[in-house]
Image 1: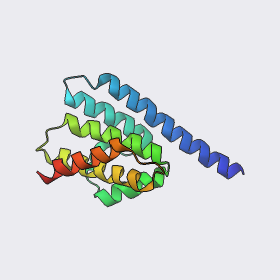
Image 2 (image 1 turned 45 degrees about the horizontal axis):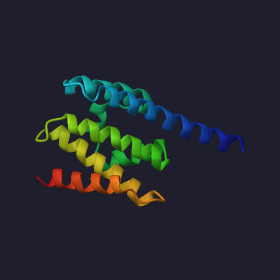
Image 3 (image 1 turned 90 degrees about the horizontal axis):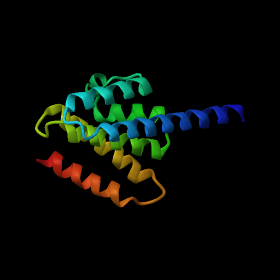
Length: 137
């Protein structure tokens, strides 16, 4: 029982941190400086995951998804994380290799959410289609 409570607390902590990071990023999303936005995402995700964006950029999509799923199994937390990565990709240069990598990882996160969430989300479905289109070009 104690172990279950600890795991639930960790899942709740992870989700709450992602929610707060997401709210902070939404507040600065209007910033015209994509580098500032990337630094804020890097700082938050490094604090949360102990893994910088540079380290994540060097991971394959499969390694990245496995790492995220080792940190949380909560579909809502993965969805929040996908939203953060989507915003990060939107701030980048669409022709940049790093942006394409962010889009690929974001697509994997959204696909995981769509496959494992108990409810269908039109927004996630649309994001998946949008990312597939961006990656095809």
